Amino acid sequence: MNRRTLLRTATALGAAGLATGVPLDAATAAPAPPSPSRDPLRVHVVLFPGVEELDLAAPYEVFSASDYFTDRGVEVRYVALDGPRAITAAFGTRLRADRGWAPQEADLLVVPGGGYARREDPGVWAEIRRGALPRALAEARRPGLTVAALCTGVMLLSAAGITAGRPCTTHHRARADLERQGGVLKNARVVDDGDLVTAGGVTSGLDLALWLVRRELGVDAALGLEAMLEYEARGTVWTPPSPS
Image (tube, rainbow, N blue to C red; front, side):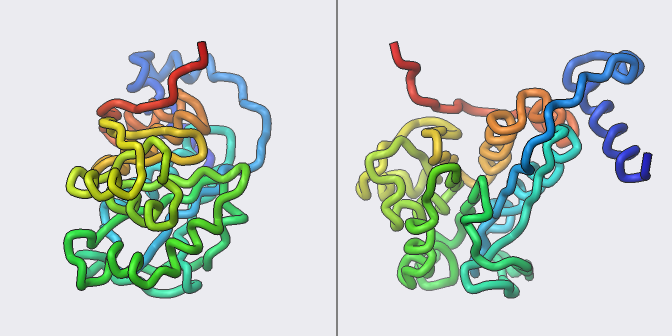
């Protein structure tokens, strides 16, 4: 067993014990059988100038760390519409998107927000005015792809026409705009409408990612992450009513 595998196993078992209250020895003595091998879950987190640091960092860390709690591989990458490039985020952090735009290679496309209150600065408003990113998001939709957004990143989806007539939510200061533009606003922390998943303000990126991990990788993976992060998922997750 190599060092990465050893550390990965110890981390997962320790977090599983914390999450379930089972002592570490008991978890080690009776490991769960491995799940069948599947293709990796491919997650692309979208970067653009003025993106909010926490909006992108919380989902990126949750999805990256989820690899420790599941037998299914998880591949996470930052992508930018204009190809590999350096990005300056809302508070001056310099980031680099090492991969170009390739939504056909993703299972989850995660769109952060940022800069919606500063209409003349880089951020969501600038991307809406430029038009290229909303167009690319609209064209990215296909069977098998879930488009997720949080905070004012949801307004990029709105500009793309993706939220029109669909249950959704966003940052509290943008909710009226989202509703005016045709979104069916739900008062929930996370709104899961199948291939469209949206979440509220900045810190809801944790809840969005934990919910998607639960949905795509299973409850045990989500519980292990919560224990590792010392964070308990909060708020309501809206899902469509079950057919009667």
